[in-house]
Image (cartoon, rainbow, N blue to C red; front, side, top):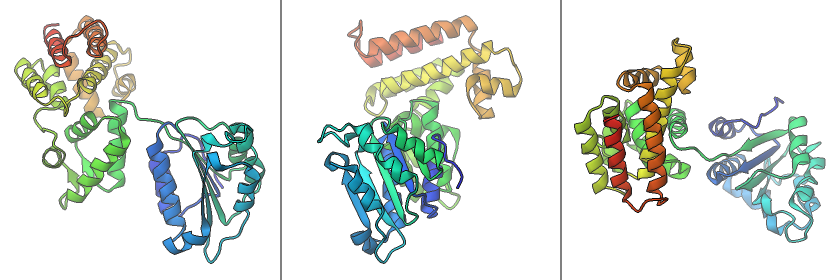
Length: 352
């Protein structure tokens, strides 16, 4: 059985589970609860039919576990008229709290089971909001290659959200262009549950060509295809003041749909990458892609074209102004309206 690394992807793991390629043990831990819930749900759904769950599914909450040896005994039972017995420990971060044994100590009892797990049992340990503490148990799972250790991290704003959205869309058999992708990512943000829910909605509505377009997003998610962060980035890249301020005017009229914090984050990412592009010593396409941290030649070309309109010093100044706007928009050192601060920032960028 091939060893599983901790950097196993959510979609890769989900695909294996949906294909019923199960492992005896799954350790799901980290800050992003959505991934953990989705994977747990998929394991139960694919391993057991609804009728089989009555006798072969055991869900235990960490706070209710007084002695982990009882869980081990449960894992060693044979399934009843089914292929698998599934044992799920939810909120494993609370194991041992009722009996003062300590979470790590109790979880590490499972290392003895992990040394030789039952082939007919699937043990799922869900540890939310933090890294799991049972190091000996986790190390035994890895050493014996008997399961998967998946670390569920929250998405960061900006390009990582776009990458997650793009990967999920591909996994659904759909395609999307850069503008539509930016529209989703910048307006939905790093709420992964909402991001995937919106994409699932769009999947149902795509035409026969399976393309998610800006027009489809505008009609069904309520994001304007003409006034969004992608178009603002385009306008600033070309120093198109008229278009930039049309977008800012739209933002001021629709503040809930266009949070300033997301726009500021987008601008910081764009001009930071522009500065890296301008100062990169390796001017080959591969070198520039590495410098700006993008695998998209289209994205690198866009940054390169924009860099012709901004000097290196201008980029440095703009990044400083963006940082200042971010701090002031959060009420630190300023009581000015966030939209007014954004308007001021755009003015400074255009006149840099």
